[in-house]
Image (cartoon, rainbow, N blue to C red; front, side):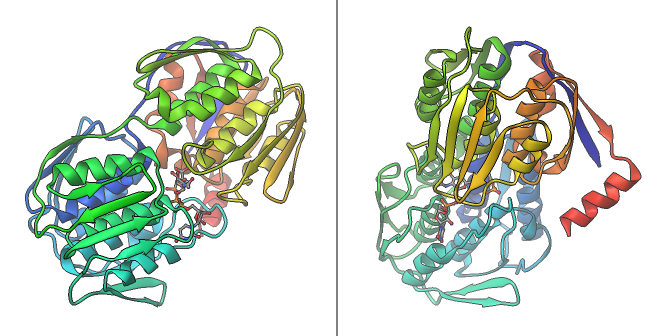
Length: 431
Ligand SMILES: CC(=O)N[C@H]1[C@@H](OP(=O)(O)OP(=O)(O)OC[C@H]2O[C@@H](n3ccc(=O)[nH]c3=O)[C@H](O)[C@@H]2O)O[C@H](CO)[C@@H](O)[C@@H]1O
Ligand SMILES: C=C(OP(=O)(O)O)C(=O)O
């Protein structure tokens, strides 16, 4: 087990290549279960969530190779093996195994998912969708049991706009009999990416990326080759880093439309941003950063996954900023750690209220979840002195070679093994 150390205050320049999208990858990999011949996915990020899902597909009989960011899944010998425990608990996205296995085998047993602890993460809308398609769903001893004689298309109105439920219902419905209509569907780019893969596999899907998705079920799906979209959250994290400490920091392999809400906010704060076709150049503001109010919303609103990283930048803005998370109202575990570093911030309800600019100083802090980790890395890059971050395994779930990429643009960042008492503390934390 390791910790991350950062010596802050260094100007960052050069270019950084954005990897494939974590939140697409974790749905694309389960989707391969639905095919009857091998599926190849290019440019997958090398992150622990991807490796965990590969392990789960191997457990159910898949033949998997993952080399140089290309994944080949041969799903032909997969079986409907129950997965009530073990690796499924390590990530939230194991819930996509429910939709995919239900779609192929008409049955599945999947342990309740793990992932970042952002407060309650209900899956009632996923279950409502599976039941509408004809599945019987029960929760027994911490695992979800799904079984259907057959799956029949249905009209499903989502009571809350949910990325997870929209994708999971698509996965279960593509091989159901007849038409499924998902109303009040989420519109995130990752949903379009999953629909694109499924379409290349032979599925009939219309409307992905709008709030009504129509699926005409087919009997079989075949193998194909798919290139994943770039990670808008990783791109956004580097844009924030550029606004904090960048001198012409070039972010390469980004779809600018996917990060528009962040671009607008950073411009409002005074960062220098130039947007190209698939690149964005970001430099620190010449003057002081201005405060801003931010509210996380469903796409194309400001993403909840960038709330924590942006909070670190807002500590540097003059005046009062308020950042409100309407998606995950308890996603504020990074705030106590930022305070340890000197941030002037408090949490009220679903909002963090900041008063800046604050001089941040390096401290020993804990990443409690993935984007909390990103927020502490950003704070560490800004702070004077050395910041020590434990809980790096959370960051490794979702950022591909973050340390190497940061070193490439001039950051002073390295890893060290945890001391014995830090290992004990981390293991206790994971219980
Ligand atoms: C809308 C949104 O920003 N979704 C983000 C969310 O997706 P994730 O799939 O985790 O969350 P959803 O989009 O499903 O949930 C959105 C909201 O709906 C609620 N909900 C969801 C499902 C359900 O069955 N019942 C229910 O009440 C959730 O508690 C949440 O408040 O986290 C992912 C990982 O951080 C991000 O990539 C997604 O962009
Ligand atoms: C919270 C996140 O991931 P997960 O839902 O997979 O825990 C994230 O990507 O910010």
